[in-house]
Image (cartoon, rainbow, N blue to C red; front, side, top):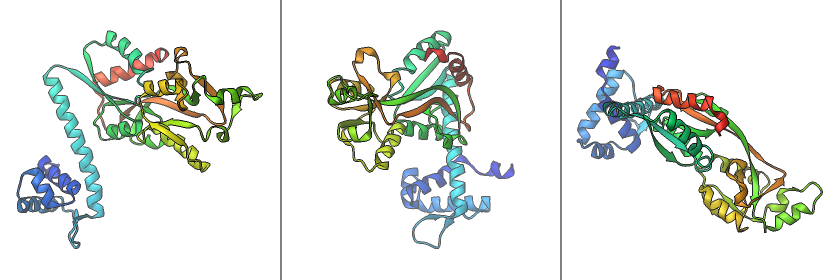
Length: 304
């Protein structure tokens, strides 16, 4: 406890900035202090910790193994501190607030419906919604820049994140009604298409920040197929319009496709099953607003 009383957040921020800047000189400019003052502050921090954080035998600034572990701890602490500062400001204004991450593919069928019902039950809770690919949202959640995020479940994240299962679905190959693959499928007894049938058709892929796209890409790579990518986008409305005009094909979940879209789901040799979850960071203390939101989903899964 005595050690924690002597170390300040300013010292930790100095250390964090130096590591990220990879230069004491550059860090000093960002921190608006002199380089000698910053060097002294770092040495004082090491002395107080009784740890060697930097390997000074090399010309380039390098962390020791202990320094690398300390950097991870400091990063988590500073992220938590920034989150706490935001919470305090909201409390001062008498507001309950949730920073929510939603992937564009999930937005049409999850958030609007559940949001309307939730707001009627909890009108005092406000949202700040971030839309991005699942991989980017997951990173923001781990950095505690988001409170709750809709994600695709991945067991490798279970040590850092808590999951509340919402639904299971699959990604299928969709084309427009005039696409030649429709006739090809209809000409077969079981309507089954293989990768050889559709490997050369124009495709719409999601951006590289998309988790599902990483899975789809691995599938093509497994069979050494270079797909004809016409466009990369996470905007589901754009994807459906282009697929509907038979300009390209795309893998989509049935949850985002409606009868009025006039799309054709093809029976193929592969589907991509996913489980959509609500995810929180295990290091983030759940506020009453977060807990109410999660509980609301657990009690109302039939709305999705």
